[in-house]
Image (cartoon, rainbow, N blue to C red; front, side, top):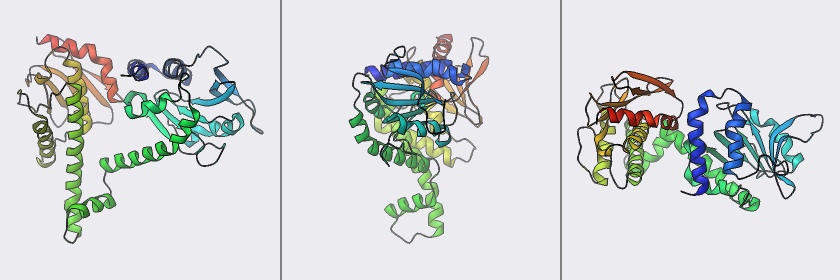
Length: 368
């Protein structure tokens, strides 16, 4: 892992641990944004020649307004940063000050952030005018590692504005395409189903066929993503594959993917009201990755029910490690004490689970 990736991981853990106690914009800046500027980007937040807090540049009749931070390179403002409270919406309405200051300050990069999610803007559409859409969106608590090299270009030691701007257009469209794909995988629309159906079905596509393939597309996408999760887990655990419930033997990569696909297909077809989601599977993998520091990963399995997914040791209901209550608006992680009393902890993003790592490991020790 690179130095910048390690620093991002450390900041992600800080967000997971402290996020729920952050209630104001000022607290967000102190707890998360300043460490991002200092530890991740490498700028001295206490040097006003590098980082200017409450940066002012009067714009027309707008006077006295301030941008939270301006980052200076070689005496020139290069980056403007506007901060919002953790969890606040980030969009055009929140970026109005950045729009006004971008041209006046002659900055090339503007950042809108809530301390966890960062939206990066430049002037692709018109020179010296901030674009309405970001060219890069990065969430520290759910980091896309492919974006780390792009973030590296903004750091003090390797700052390269030309490289950033040159790559911005490609990043902008790749990001937009990824968001479209994510939306289609979550809720495929009629055009997407029709496009995929035409690739595999050679006869006339009637409404009945469309209805049939809408179900098949959902299943295929779910199984495909489950395979991807399994492949990543195998790599993280040194080649160990997915272990389905009631199976404590080692399985090959192909068999592991088949098990995930079979389990996912069963969830859709069984009609028992149980729907194992990919988010539940990813959360299970996080719990297992934490617990496998104490016992073999092969011993940690999941069982899904209508109301929660249970994570068990040795596939034994008398050895619960955790419960994932993801079937309501607010997600909860259920943890157990020595008497097997469950306490539910609210989580907003899957990374929040890492804040309970020590409790998960302690629960495993109760059964050993």
